[in-house]
Amino acid sequence: MTTRHTPSCQVLNVRDNLMMIDCGEGAQLGVRRMRLKLMRLNHIFISHLHGDHCFGLPGLVSTMALLNRTNSLTIHTFKDGADLFSRMLDYFCRERPFEVRFNIIDTHRRVIHEDDAVTVTTFPLLHRVPAVGFIVAEKPKLRHIIGEEVKRLGIPHYAMNSLRQGQDWIAPDGTVVPNAQLTTPADPSISYAYCSDTKFSRRVIKSVEGVDWLYHEATYDDSLRIKAHKRYHATAREAATVAREAGVRQLILGHFSKRYSDESLLLDEARSVFPATRLANEGLVIDLNAL
Amino acid sequence: MTTRHTPSCQVLNVRDNLMMIDCGEGAQLGVRRMRLKLMRLNHIFISHLHGDHCFGLPGLVSTMALLNRTNSLTIHTFKDGADLFSRMLDYFCRERPFEVRFNIIDTHRRVIHEDDAVTVTTFPLLHRVPAVGFIVAEKPKLRHIIGEEVKRLGIPHYAMNSLRQGQDWIAPDGTVVPNAQLTTPADPSISYAYCSDTKFSRRVIKSVEGVDWLYHEATYDDSLRIKAHKRYHATAREAATVAREAGVRQLILGHFSKRYSDESLLLDEARSVFPATRLANEGLVIDLNAL
Image 1 (cartoon, one colour):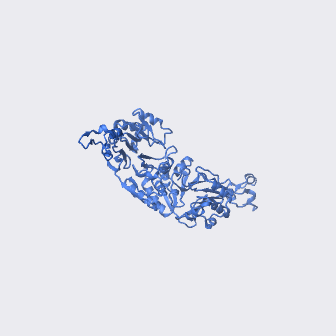
Image 2 (cartoon, chains in turn red, blue; image 1 turned 120 degrees about the vertical axis):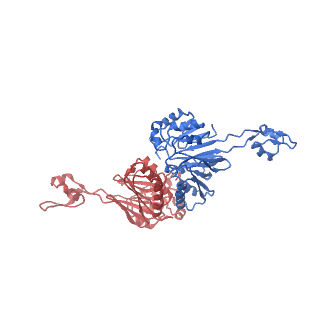
Image 3 (cartoon, rainbow over the protein chains, first blue to last red; image 1 turned 135 degrees about the vertical axis):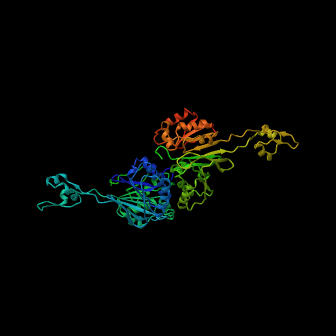
């Protein structure tokens, strides 16, 4: 924590369901300042057990406990984190009116959460302690009905769902109307990858290949490359290299060392490798559909 | 934690030694914003084990661990707090270069810390969980030497300390020079009492009798007196009543419910009972000698 930046915490909003990635100290304050609805936050994903990525958990859950929440909250974390934080919550939030579930993760690549809208997949990062990145990927969406055409052909309402899923229409007389005549393509499904904390690694590039959005730590600038490697952190140039090699569309840099009084140096360095780069900041909101 | 106020945390500076009372989430950020020297903070006193009074501990100690600190830190807290937080610190701050000691306190009135300058005494509060207030009292200070007079009488340097402690000077020829001729009175010793969280109680009045400064919680205004009692909190009027009956000199109100968008109502209510009242706020600095 510095006077300029608070510890790591991001919230993804997918169709009004909120997912939090990392929960550093003060996360509940950020969430409140941004007027996010805590009632809609049902999953928290912790990348690794360093304090600046998880010390906000007890406070956040305590605040949730004051809100008469009833739906369960799932915290996805390593076993040690589940042990430590379940003990804290059992003591400090004994009387919470909702269940907190811990989903124990490890450093393997696997789907750790899935619902109607998204899958969340872990992949290994390279840090001083066990650490994972997350890919939150929207599932394929439904195609859009061309209302006029469907009406003209008198296609019944019950068929709409299969049309939206891409099926052709077979009329009672056996005529086949191809789906492309009845629908327009679905909106694209967006994917978002989170990589913090980690040093530069080919394995990370491989893991995030082809995602739309990449958040990657850039603790240092490239003149401190040796220090970065030693401390298992990345430089802005390395983050941009991951973005370029993995073929992502947009890069967001974060987790800046407090040595930088402003991060334009890091931004410029990254943009020289990968132009579609921006800096994360407290309160930043990005529309992930705007690609 | 609200968007207007951060959780409880106060720091007393006595001759450049810092003592922290309560350590809510975000305490390390407040300390940094106020440019307080963490190296000079050696004692943390936790009034009770509710999250808004102690969730900042792991983050604060983690930050201390980055500063190459070597002097030990003592955390004064109930046994459950020592158990929970020592476990957290052993996991998250394994490699800290300094010792964290836990001094286990209970709800009895007793001196829990003493050094050259102050004593810190606990006394019971009335809250939903075991809770104590703290009185930080400066020890009597040394008198001021009247340089001219001492020089005129040729009193040797080695005698200065006993003069400052109030002893008379006995000259080699047996003449007694009364201390009052050689010194002026010591500066007053200031005492500060901290009462949060608690409901109104005669016992609390008795405990803080005659202190100079009283910090007292004022979660609600007096129209919510019943709610305050039920939740073991105090109203502004009750806090002011404690101040008046205990004969303190200055009252500071804090721990305001988030229902108040500004606390002038609480201030006015308290001042109608005890005029020398002010409101606590993030970043407030008070010179406790200015009475």
